[in-house]
Image 1 (cartoon, rainbow, N blue to C red):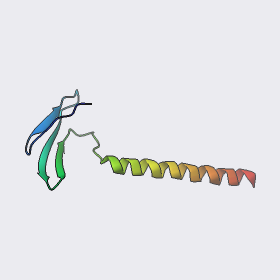
Image 2: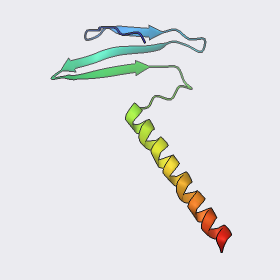
Image 3: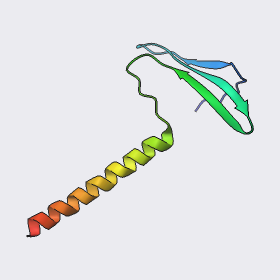
Image 4: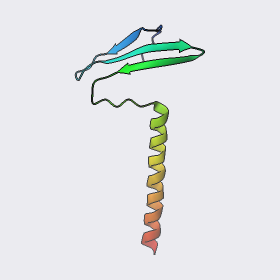
Length: 75
């Protein structure tokens, strides 16, 4: 893992074959950092906690489906 310190309006470039991703600090106040991300089309940018929530919901849905299948088979 690379750890960097950045100030407001400073950025980081991630070079890629499909285009570069630019991450920059928009604001840093009161213990919060606002980050801007500029990426080429085709990249999905999502907050980590939302992705975790979606994955959890998908797993729960799969478990519920398995239980429905088991009930159906046993009838």
